[in-house]
Length: 116
Length: 114
Image 1 (cartoon, each protein chain N blue to C red):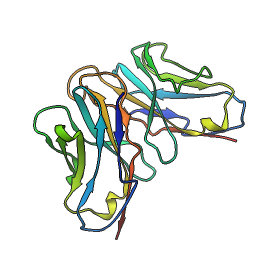
Image 2: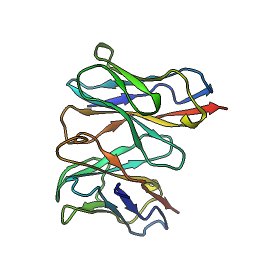
Image 3: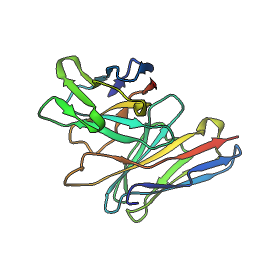
Image 4: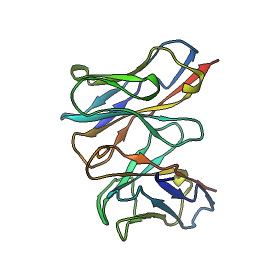
């Protein structure tokens, strides 16, 4: 499968714990995005990378959230001191820089986080 | 700021009925427009997109959408729905030629009665 992959698919944690999610984009896609989707809502933008540079962050991304893309390939999203309000589906998407499909974001299956 | 409104939260239709899902966006500049679909248990997939040119866009599975600039609308249509079209449908917008974020609507849940 050459699509966007995310790991884990499901994560249950207790309030106050730290969690980390991983996203592997489509090979050679230089742009990577993180979104959050809660029940009954559309995805909301969190942050965006071009190669290893984090170019935009949403106000939704509090200080407890941090994202990295150290080598411009896979990315991690860490949530520290999780709260029940962090429970959501976390989606990753990638996009190429040129050619057909350059303006399209391809989404992964998401990581569903449940904070107890 | 960009925003997307989907006025139908839940639509229930019988098989073979015609479908139209409304979408209005708010943005002052030129936009790219999308419809994404999320089938039960599956990830978001692109149904169709509009970047420029013919405002009537055809997508996969018999869906089409019409961009009406004067109305800031991008409604999704299908002449005859099937049970397999049961899914959540999201309208989305991004600034033209922008590498940045997609703004999604809140989604419309479509239920098809067999």
